[in-house]
Length: 451
Image (cartoon, rainbow, N blue to C red):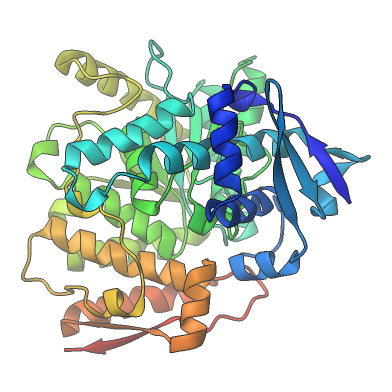
């Protein structure tokens, strides 16, 4: 099967220079990345969270960039049949394909030549800002309304229903949703918000998805996402979340959700962020109460009470969650106005470089992590964040899965008490089925030992 797709969305117009640059890029090493991300987009709704499995399922899939006078046409060869209805590509997937094209082109032509190792923190923030601006998701003059919703792709039906209800309550209050764009707790709030927005006759509801090439195949953009951005790595993705959003809701999840929580807590614990009004709510149905008790206990025993002060836990009360978030928007607005910061991008939030520098979760880097209490709490949060980032990589990312198959599990070594806490939390995720989709057997990609 061969089909030709015309440009839509933000890639509808390209200069001749951009078209030529794109053709050159597509014939280079960038092509494989473009192909894999495009294949992930076309697999929206798939029932696997293995990047490797998806990529191996369609070995004959190709995507070519064809030149035409006013832009480009994408040629799809042997695409997944499920992406088509009566011979026509689903429009949402068509938009997402050109979002992939836009972001990979921009990052690799404008930002890739820059060496990040020697950049100051402020310049790394500028890179994230540039990507969001190029994707046209930064809207000036619009009051705070963006709620980042984090949570796992592998959650129970009861938990999913609760995320939908929270999303509905947010939509009824005319708030917009930003998630990791995949299934589970990333799709539920968007699904609920569409109903809430419909009831309030909100015609331009925003359902923004932030992803990155390493995770997009395991968590393909769900069909509700109407603004998709592909950041180059997990660190820029996380920074985009916290600078773009005005509040954060965290639903039940696995190691990826723990990584996100540790990231935002490490950021908020920085002394310069003491006055930042960024509400963080952990919430789920009554059946998830033990999950949040385990998370709260882990934070208390690793980062301490100071970290616990930055979030609240609300169990089985979607209206209260939404009311609290809506109320916080006024505080965010007043604070941004008082210091002269933008509503669309939180420039004043201090993020240390350790939270911005890309971490490659290979065997050497994982074994060399400083996992002990004798370091500043925000630095410990950064290193613990990398532990869970590595587990995510070993669980679902193509490169991580292949590395585990070839070299065995990652070895995590650290202070006895700390490693016991990490082991206990990860074990609880396994027992609750949060490491893989239901029905999938899980083999740990890590091994924990004490110093």
